[in-house]
Length: 122
Image 1 (spheres, rainbow, N blue to C red):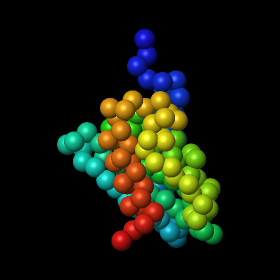
Image 2 (image 1 turned 180 degrees about the vertical axis):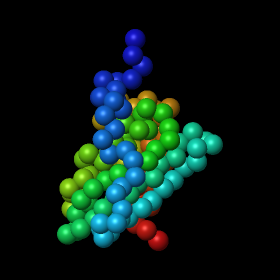
Image 3 (image 1 turned 45 degrees about the vertical axis):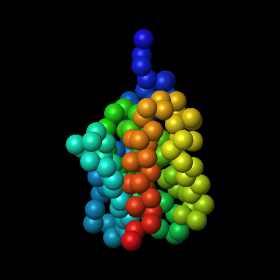
């Protein structure tokens, strides 16, 4: 029996947005990260912006398949959206949509912290 929901398995099998962004193209990148590998979850987002849109979303993540799949899912739905109309939802919404177990909610909170740190740099 597969412990992962089919949608999580599909996302985890195709981490198309994982990795570092290409640098040197003069693009504006917003960056944010949260978590610690020592506690089991660390996430870093890099968001390329232009024309008031998220043109590209990249991430680096250390964590369980649910963590990586959620990062990939967010990258897919956010890429191309206007910055003033992102409608991120929250980790509880994400868990319900993806079938992430309640025990993993803390990991989704780390993802949210990293994404918000990139979107709202201080």
